[in-house]
Image 1: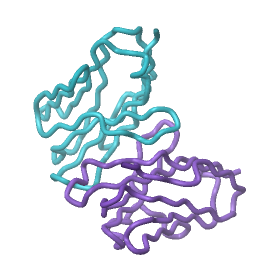
Image 2 (image 1 turned 180 degrees about the vertical axis):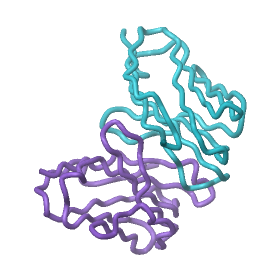
Image 3 (image 1 turned 180 degrees about the horizontal axis):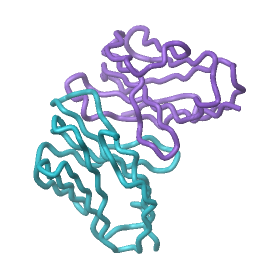
Image 4 (image 1 turned 135 degrees about the horizontal axis):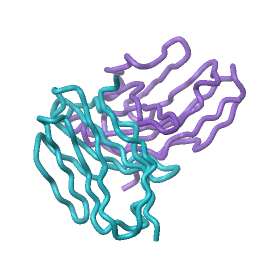
Amino acid sequence: QKEVEQDPGPLSVPEGAIVSLNCTYSNSAFQYFMWYRQYSRKGPELLMYTYSSGNKEDGRFTAQVDKSSKYISLFIRDSQPSDSATYLCAMSGLPGAQKLVFGQGTRLTINP
Amino acid sequence: EAGVVQSPRYKIIEKKQPVAFWCNPISGHNTLYWYLQNLGQGPELLIRYENEEAVDDSQLPKDRFSAERLKGVDSTLKIQPAELGDSAVYLCASSLASQGDTQYFGPGTRLTVL
């Protein structure tokens, strides 16, 4: 079993829809949780960063962490075609820790 | 500010041939990472450098892979000889030493081994 599991999709939704992306993990030492966005033929770029349990909002994006369930989510409101990309969750166990464990990514398409 | 630069962007070689990838990190970032990303998968760490020292190379297949970071800036990842299963995207990332959970990735080198 992988340390981090992510539904690979693909996920296709109409423009304006609310999108929910999720990851589960098995290592209870993980405390720092990240979402990266990766456009085709590009490297991943950091989208959201959260520590421990709770919510964090940034514009149309909300990251949620539930450590008791070992479950994290990324919500995208009012989705746009430009949000079409692969979304990768990543996590680490220590502050400033260099070892990130990534999920396999969910490929998302927003249809105009 | 320039991001992480990688070259070449694409490389096609025949199996058993050698290949090398180059990375120039963001200025001031003393931590450099090489990742392997297979199709439909997340990145997996191959090696991490703190300045010129390789501090985590536990996932690097040392029989055929090697890396160096002379002078603690640019880095080169080499495969010799390449195998069919090495076809993947090789990503370089960099970060400040104290902010390893905020990594900046380059565009990657897409390797195809025929």
